[in-house]
Image 1 (cartoon, rainbow, N blue to C red):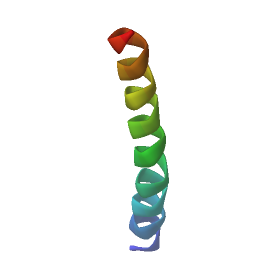
Image 2: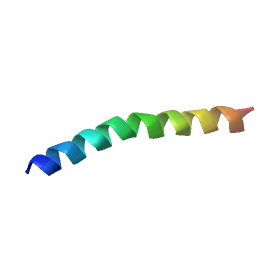
Image 3: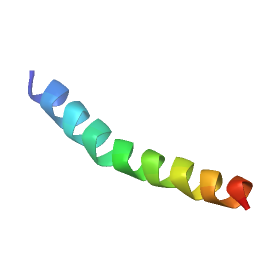
Image 4: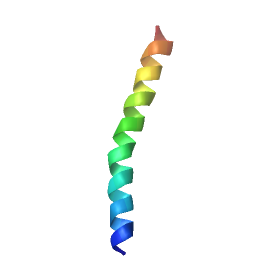
Length: 31
């Protein structure tokens, strides 16, 4: 159960990074 909590925290920390990468690429392609 504890491992699951750590996995969730890792995913929540990773999602904003992915969103930032996606926005970065969208800005590049928009130009």
